[in-house]
Length: 304
Image (cartoon, rainbow, N blue to C red; front, top):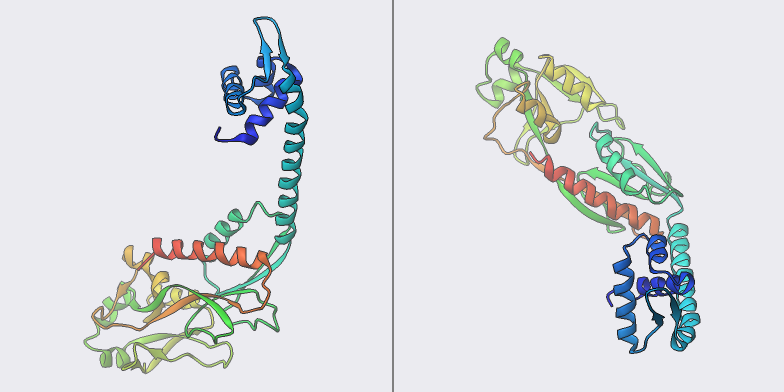
């Protein structure tokens, strides 16, 4: 018997109905299945449970003695499973606060996360799209996703992937100004898009790698929003350093051209983190595990 619990359910139901067809109907199985399971149980117990002929079915003396024990075992099992479900429900009740960068891909990631957590109706997801790294204490953040240097040892960290920038321009800009002959030519003749650091209010630098940083002479457009900068590049207003996973669709469609492919641009780790705590709620552990899997699958499928 592979499933003794289900076999006992069949036995107790048949002891109540004393009809194979009725038992099969109640349990949504075929009559031959009921016959087989009862035969397997009798063989396992080495005792007949029912006396049967073409017209009637009756419990044997052994069956009468075995029935209350079987019913009690089923009742205990049902109670055990009910308590287990209640415990899981209680552990997964409450709020989990997550902070992620302001990316358009968040819609797809969040849809998968909410679908995966749909069996926990008491779980509340507090989702913060924010390019700033929110403080885990002041903002009560449970889980964060960030690019850059890994936080201090007081965090549990899972590396998701590496993300770098791509130096890009639109075909219309290259037609107008020609292909840049060198990085120096690019710096001197071409307008650039700059991303503003919302903390300082000043534009970020343009690092390519540890040896080289771009120092453009002309900033044509600047914004705190990476997608606004992307639009300026797409419209031919300027050259931009755009995150590779954001630029990929436009490169594939020919709406953007990559400049100086031979230059290796430094990549930074994208990591999921949560504060280290002596006791972490199980709901946080569950969401952390699920989100890690979703992110790894997503960036593997959309790898540059």
